[in-house]
Length: 98
Image 1 (cartoon, rainbow, N blue to C red):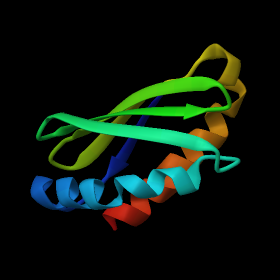
Image 2: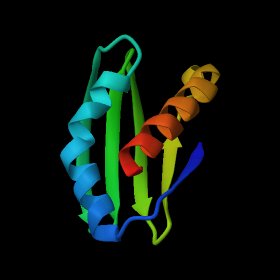
Image 3: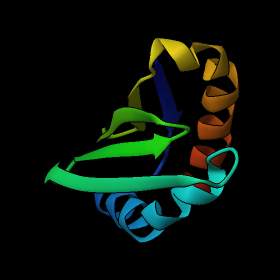
Image 4: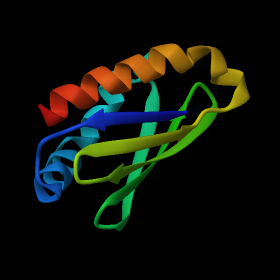
């Protein structure tokens, strides 16, 4: 699943917002029972792993000049949740980067 969220911020500001708010990801996982791990393999890429409902969802965020590109590998078993997940990520991403 690929999602893009446009922004008008500097890369530094996007990085700061993502770092300071990454702990809030848990609040957006349905059911609230999840573990989220994040890492920054480079200054413009955040990797994440969300464990919920017995499944591990891997993804990453790539910061670009005018957008954040979000890639999520959704397990087949959770494919039916793609529209809900995509909508939530888009909405929360826009709020974060507004």
